Length: 119
Image (cartoon, helix red, strand yellow):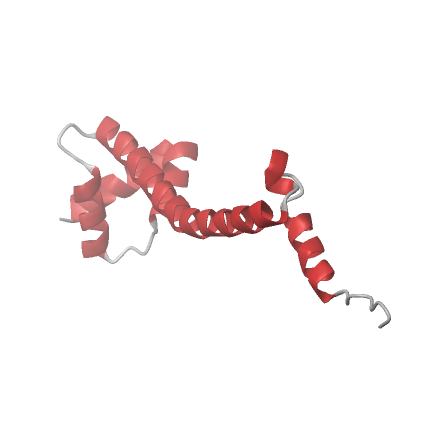
């Protein structure tokens, strides 16, 4: 019997995986079994950390808003500020409020003072 040459499909699949893990260190970028495991692990971590990143940014924005709001008034806090925003039906999300708090504190003070006045 004559020797047959294997197809290219499996090699193409492995090459594609090698390109994905080419920046990994050691056996994680050289051995096929380890490459497969590390690729799965990397994709799982990326998927998990996308949600975690959203959570962390929200915490950061809340912390920034709270810090600036507490500087303005002694007995005023983040939770009261957000509650008053909802009562007044002002549609500002936490990201925008945090940017205002960092870049232009006086503007945030004006917003909070207006909300308190109209109570």
